[in-house]
Image (cartoon, rainbow, N blue to C red; front, side, top):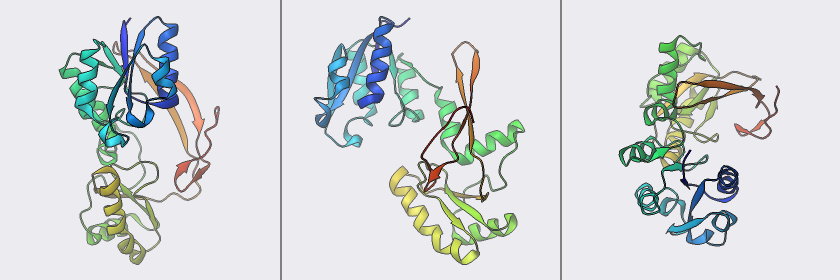
Amino acid sequence: MFAKVLIANRGEIAARIIRTCQKLGIQTVAVYSEADADSLHVQLADEAYLIGKPRVAESYLNIEKIIEVAKAAKAEAIHPGYGLLSENPAFARRCEEEGIVFIGPKADVIAAMGSKIEARQTMEKAGVPIVPGVSFALDSPDEAAAAAASIGYPVMLKASSGGGGIGMHIAHDEAELRQAFEGSQKRAASFFGDGTMYIEKYIERPRHIEIQLLADGHGNCVYLWERECSIQRRHQKVVEEAPS
């Protein structure tokens, strides 16, 4: 059991983690930006440290500052919550380098799943069925058009590093695909710092079912049943329901 954990997140996410740690008798360290000085998670934690200006890039995404605070506070572990740095392999790797436990997947696992192209390649190697598409980066509208012709329209143009429906576009023909390519690529580069694009077959009226997996560092793994995520708006989930 850890004696002290730093929560590298904010708001309700951080507050929930802090309450759980309190029930377990674990001391907590909060981090906050100038805009969040009066937030609930700051008040609930045993210790709280200012890490930067209001912009997320200057505070909650500042890996070195968070590591610095964790070491100064003598936190044994960092819980990233979700969002922000939780899916950043560089952050998980820095924690490992500093001898701080990252409460989450190993850096190589995050890297494998963070890139949708690499995730497709990983699943192909494991023999898992995947949606028809390409498992390599498309560098131009010409490459995208050639890939779409081999798959068949309609197709879904996707950002490899994307999320939240950003960098996705449905194309029903080549003209629509070519028109969308550069715009989607630029948008992905702006939001994620990576404009890598690929294509999958667009499945019309699908059922979106997810199964959550939970594993520890000792080889134990369980699945937490399934949930229905089909009700979406602009490719973002609106309602998740369990059981499906």
